[in-house]
Image (cartoon, rainbow, N blue to C red):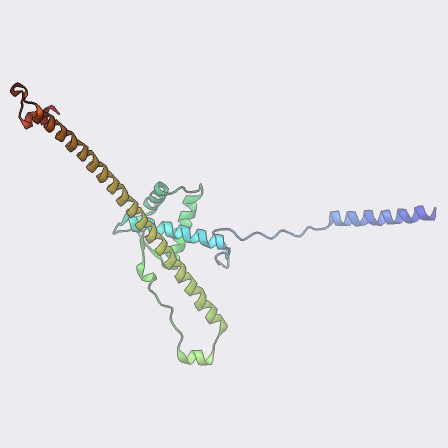
Length: 227
């Protein structure tokens, strides 16, 4: 009976622990912040450090710069023109319109683009801006680690802008090269067809010269018209 009593106590203890665990407060899950684009409500407003996210951001920047540089409108390109250019050339996701609007706003705030009357133009001076160096007196007095981190972040941002522009420029050149290859193939085909016609005319003239019957003779002009 003592053994049964001990087992009953242990069973009650386990049951009590199970109830306590079942009624315990479950800690809230942390929200995953590894999304490809940062929302406007983010307080820190820092880009994700995921390599895939950085690659996607650079890709969207390159598409926008390629569209604006290809449209070549002196007054700038509006949202619809940029959207239409990218949709015609690439397959875009369902949420692309919202992502494109967010990216355009981001590039304007970064100084890569300038927006005038709902039109966007590439601000080329942004690529050539230099990071202001602190005065020599300030460097000697306060070699702050925070300032070095700020300069490093700005340098990375400038490098990302330059890389996006280079990608867009390279893709534009590859498109022009592809069009040139198509034109060359078309001209080559026309030349081959012209050679075929000339060979046919040569055969007709040779047959005409071999005939000795004067009644069957006709002028070269007539032969060409018959062909």
